Image (tube, rainbow, N blue to C red; front, side, top):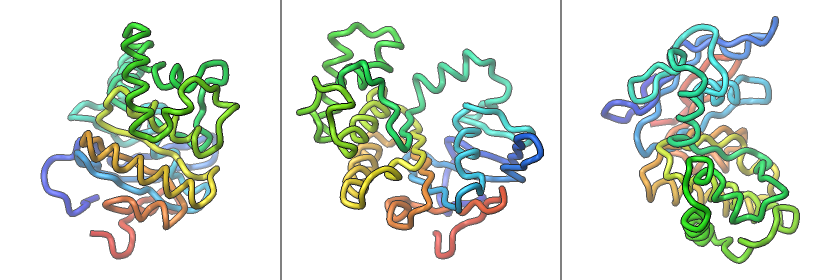
Length: 231
């Protein structure tokens, strides 16, 4: 699927098919993601948009078709190689943040760096800088249960960005927020991604969220097509 963007994509999905038992979630889905591009993947509930994100992130493998990242086919990698890719080069933001409740916010943001072997002090210093960029450094020492939904989601965005990933996968990142907090999270997410030239795959069913993207793709019945009016 062309996006009107020149140059080689950083990631591509081609003719991706995926079934869960008798239910076919994807039926030949295609998607190109270029460096620094924000692509919104839209569609009704059950259309296959989150399945497409999970296939592109290497969380699950397609039954057929291919997903390539920087020319590498994800299905040819072993589990440890795909895990390393998700830890070092991909960032993730989910609808409910999925922060570790026992850790403080700064410890949550530092966690990917700690898992990669960075020491506590430098990891937390980098995490604090990222929290400041997301305008939530004031909650650094609080635990997720003691902050608002909007603050918690910005902490989750900070965590997704702390490793300076090349691709960020955001699955309904504003789905649990009111419109004001949702707008703020999206503005900060897109601005931070653009600042580091990260690409973003943004799954949403909300047009106001998709409006932050450079390009929109619609998934319906497991197939993809360019949104009406997309460049």
